[in-house]
Image (cartoon, rainbow over all chains, first blue to last red; front, top):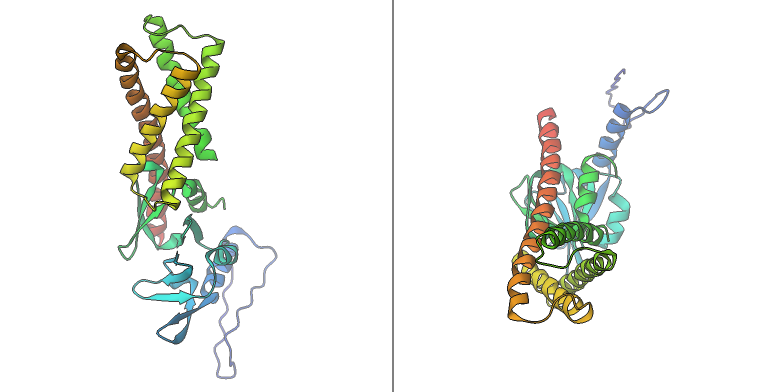
Length: 147
Length: 139
């Protein structure tokens, strides 16, 4: 694989072109990573509008009919419903873990079994989330690349 | 749905083995086709009632404590065993002797199913943690 970077003042917008014979698993990984970096979600906080990259999001949570975006420290509001987000981002590193939460599996530090068939997730920022028993297999398959 | 089927298969297997042992020891009736079918109906009833109870307590009463839900599931199991097994299928009468025999059985079955499911969950958690470890070592 050859990597060519052209840097010049004549370019006003960054553009990435991939020329290939076929998309193999390594190239697919690169494309996935690029798509995650390029895909952003409009978020709201204290009257201001932000563009949040998927890569910076730890999890989405629905509370009282509102959807919130949780990053490492900050929390933003999002206009999408959880099911809409699930449809948009389930191809990326996100998976639903309960009726009210969708999590970024890249931000999971470790997992512990709990009572009643649940899993306790410790995130990279130390926060905890609970995986409902109905979503345990989906989470496992997501990690194993089956979903 | 998969969770319900898994619970039914675990509890039915364990219950059948225990009944087989008790039958051999002449403490319970020896297993036959009717008894096996009745045990299966009891296991299905327990799993369905547990599913409904958990759903109601979570959505209506907003109770989500794993300990409370586990206790409720045990109560569900006892209720189904006594109503279906005792009243409907006449597997035992409601004497003190029956209670003394059945209650420890219920506790053993409940915790055995609980233990098997916890082991399965621990295995899944371990597999995921290994993937996370590998992923982190690559970073």
